[in-house]
Length: 138
Image (tube, rainbow, N blue to C red; front, side, top):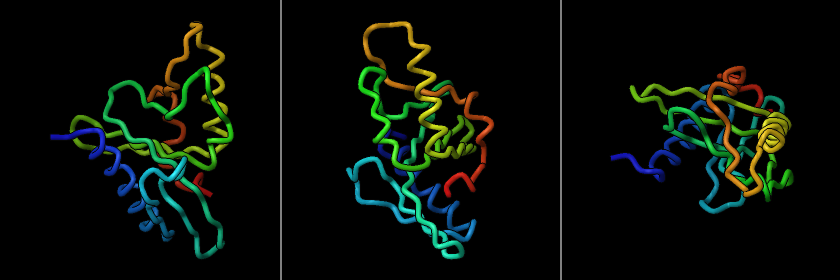
């Protein structure tokens, strides 16, 4: 039986594994480390990256972990990888640079018509241009 903890951990381990396949190092942070799930290192360029992973099995949307009324751009400290677990257990990854996440979040906020805060979420379809764009980690 899948639960949100298993899905979240799966996504983090999957992203770290993909990083290693690309020749990079990905190390999971201790749980509850604010805003960073994986510390990345590219030994060829000696660049580092603070990566946030959001994993979802939802058919339509994925949450980014912030609210429309309290969005804090300073909490977006690096690139995001959105891991989509499809019903047939296939995996899609969408890799966004820090500024891309900020831009999409601000667009969501600007389009929100309500006065009450809601969780910021991205439709999987709008993430399609970022599919497997692993170099966006750097």
